[in-house]
Length: 131
Length: 387
Image (cartoon, rainbow over all chains, first blue to last red; front, side, top):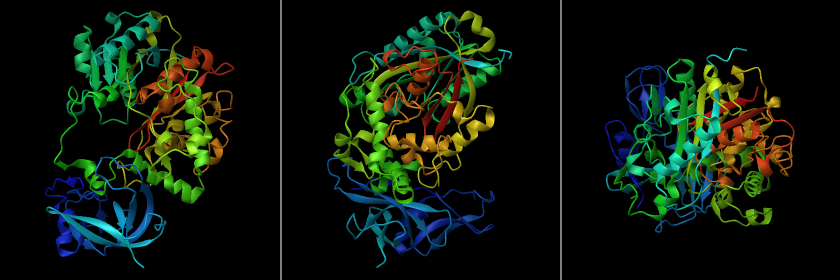
């Protein structure tokens, strides 16, 4: 069981978009920029004309690590923690897991696409390699 | 140069340093305060300010058990200024705040302290219960759901970029931990008193590539005190004052995972905008090593070497050894000296600049030191000099 986020008015679209198979990132309708983490104001132009918008759901592995340490007794290791740069949303990175491949099969620059894992009311955006 | 409005570190003090200490954290703090007062030749009645990081944290008392308000009342301090909080540029931000109070005439002698009781809290969960959390909020929600539960995992990704982009090797990174552990052997108060070899380091269990067990500090119980005094109050002080020449605590993007570069780079860059000194003037560097990779980013961020060259800069360890051109973390850092959480670096800079390092005293006549804390989205750098 993963620690789950507490949902609120600003993060709900991000954490539940997976129900519709969409990765939703906060977007400024005034200056056409994505904002992450989601907040009710644009960090580029200070506009509050913002709303979540679906992105492609693809991206590139910007960096990663292989987590070997079990941080609690039930944690299965090793696994990949990666920082993914999202296509179409410059400057937005997601910390996530790369799944569906061995821990030695991930490399910088790998193309990845989102896949959602549901737990309770949360749809976690995980990523797998595009072969 | 007029001494008015300048700020100096005068008395410094440290409690016993250990794990699962039975002595109450308030008393550890008092021990460190008394040592600092004695060194400065000050009495508690001359103290008129208190500053700490991050203040009392009720839901995680081991992390920070003693608040500024509690210390003020417990010691009968008549405070004209005080502050304690975590929303500042990391641990030594408490010193930065105190300097502001000194320079604006709000206080003359400020006790700055950091008390940690994390090892005791871990060993005695009945006394110090861990917070129970159903759902994560704030910045943790962007990492914890992916089982990225430790700063080790977050920093490992920045370290991995150095591995892939700049060719950082484990043998190079090892030199931080090896230097720390070698220096700790010469520090009577150090937490870890066991030598570490390169072979042991290379065969250590991995935490998150490329960070291994020996790249991490460990929970410690201790208190560290730095008294910051006004330049026009130095005639009340008997110890050699150490001037706070310049300070920085910049951040380009306050985030654990959206930032291109950790705050050690912006902070290091900005420190040198505020002084005529240059990195070449620095006689010793005391650079935060909660994880050894942070120290490497500080070496680059402060301009001791180019960005990406940190691994080659420390290769072999000679340059950063006690008798090298840039003696590093001479008390053992946090990895060898104990997780004093930032304050240990400024404490040691003062020890070295006063020539009081004993077996670990660096050669020559050191006059300039840099001390840092943090390195993620939180970072502080202090440039210190003996005039």
